[in-house]
Length: 165
Image 1 (cartoon, rainbow, N blue to C red):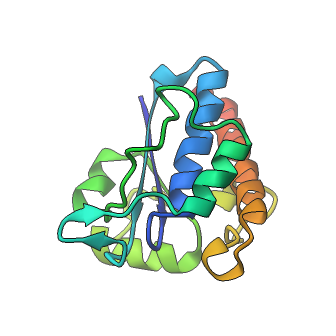
Image 2 (image 1 turned 45 degrees about the horizontal axis):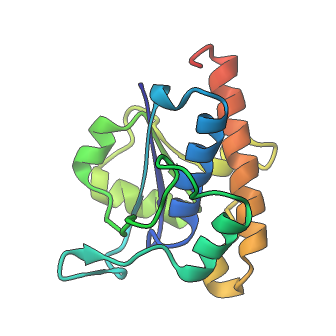
C-alpha cells in the first residue's frame, strides 16, 4: 500500500484538489487498491470546534468540470479540512506539500523529516522547487488544477520508475 498525504495551508483548495485528482487517476488506471490517499492542512484556520470546512466551492467546481467526484472513490462531498498530525509522519510514505511554507509548517508539527518523506508535489516534475499556484489569492483554479495534474502525473511516473506500481 502506497500511503500519500497531500498538504497545504487550509486543506480546502490545493491539497484536497490533489487528493481527488490522484484518486481519479489511480481509479482510471485500475490501481486504486494500491493506494491510501488523503489530504490535510498545516493550519487550523478552516477547522472550527473540531469540524473542518468543506472543499472551497470554486475548487469543487473545478474538480467537477473535469468529471472528478462522480464515483464513490472520488466523491468529495464529505471531505472536511483536518490538520496534519505528528502521527501522520509515521503512517504516510509521502507527505506532498503545495509550497515551501507548507514544508516548514509540516516539519514544525511532525518533527524532523528523518526519512525524507516530505517533498513538494512539483518536485516530481521538471519544475522541481516550484509551488502549486495558490487559488486562494489569485482566484485562478485552472492554473491550480493544471499544476496538480502535472505533479500527480510526475509522481505516478516516479512510482512506476521505482517499480512500486
